[in-house]
Image (cartoon, rainbow, N blue to C red):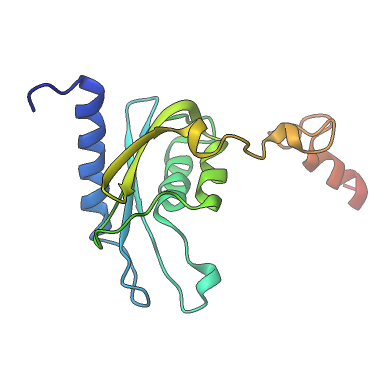
Length: 163
């Protein structure tokens, strides 16, 4: 596409992967089919879709589905460089608060996020979407991200239950 930067081209390609993924969404209750694509710092692209459940609270969004898949495939050290979200309903659908919070543990702050918005697709840096994330540092003093380290939440729980 003439006049587009390599970043724009890469984002549009990622958006296309999200649209393709949306066709696999399981949305029998809302018919709101969403796909997400994550570009990881290792160059891999991982997709996910929303999966609904009759117990609506158990529904998982496409962004979290992709994130869980990325961690399952590549481990907890992954870093997300870009996110694309698409739906088959032609309506605005920025990432919900739960998805933003989950992504915050793995995404680079300046990672671009492209999503359907009123008037067309919108692109923003992740830090603009969730400027005040609840981070591991928000937890009690001495708790670290990885379980088992001295002072970690997991270690504290094991001490309380006598392990």
